[in-house]
Amino acid sequence: MNVTANTTLPTPSESSYCGPGLDHFHATYRGVHGYVSLLVCVFGSVANVLNIAVLTRREMTSPTNAILTGLAVADLLVMIEYIPFACHMYLPQRPKRERYSYGWALFVLLHAQVSQVFHTISIWLTVTLAVWRYIAVAHPQRNREWCGMQRTLAAIAAGYICCPLLCIPLYLAFEIEPKIALLGEDGNDAMPNSTTGQNTTLYVVDLSEMGKANNNLLMDVNFWVYSVVIKIIPCIALTVLSLRLICALLDTKRRREMLTSSSSRKSTRVMEKERQTDRTTKMLLAVLLLFLLTEFPQGILGVLSVVLGQRFFRDCYNKLGEVMDILALINSAINFILYCAMSRQFRTTFTVMFRPRWMPVPQVDANGHNNHTTTQVTQV
Image (cartoon, rainbow, N blue to C red; front, top):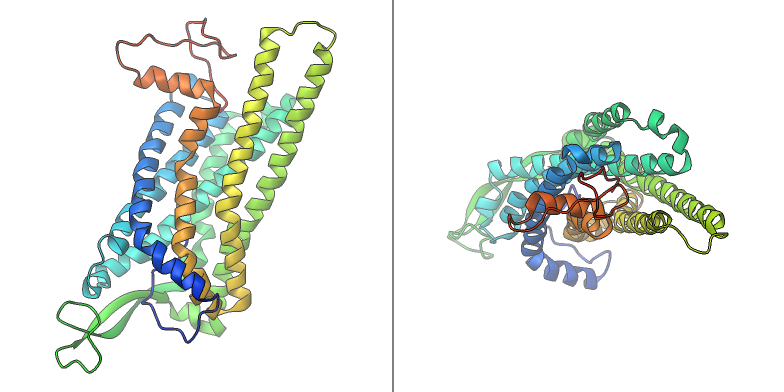
């Protein structure tokens, strides 16, 4: 999530660092961002509640699904927290006197911190999931030992403990700062040379004294942690792990085909395994693509903000804040669709839980066939 956009009063600039096109895009998209983000958050909140409900079923218990549950919880908290922020900042445009009150400034500060913590947790769990999947495919004989339920729960707990500590530079870099502005009776900026305007104290989230010290050293540290440690390194790690996992899956498929090539007719079980391999590969590619589309650009922009300075941060990074937010929200909301599209077991369990009373109960075995009386564990 973007942690600094919309935290300070807009200031005029002599010329835009990234050109007038970005200014026009920012002004246009900002007008609809509130509505779009609310739709995504409402859908994503419901979807993640459903994810949690399905993945925590007793028959769904597995290390992989435990990680997916932890991921769903983090994504749910990100979107629930973003809803009041979107309503306050975008719907409707309240007078400045209301938007920049001390109470709302405190909320915006907490929003920047809380949203970043939970989004960092979701990144941690996404990389953990890739590691667990790779071990399961590349080292199946060690999977039970290395990726058992106890170690999985420890990895999830570590994410929820370490990620708030990782965001400490963010907590220290920003604070609430009072600013004096000339406002009219409507609570917005007074006209130049107005005789009816009065000086009003507005409260904004800005760099703290600690963040400004030593030529904004702490601010730079915050951006390096945010861009490199939280964004770019996980992107590289997930890319490498996913590519190796896909290669391992394809290698397993080739070996299976060689073993069955002497047979004129493949068994139903072998064909189902091959189809499952294809579904898993497509899911991995989808997860990787979504992760890279939402996280990698934010990391690059953060690094550029440190390298190119405050003008780039003000004129480019901040004006892409809403776009980065909506991409992160979409990534947090879309997993339910991926599970339904690519996991037969998830669809079956979901149908069992939420089907109308008059519909028959679907029953599947471990291979996804509708012929047993119990629903088996899924590795989504």
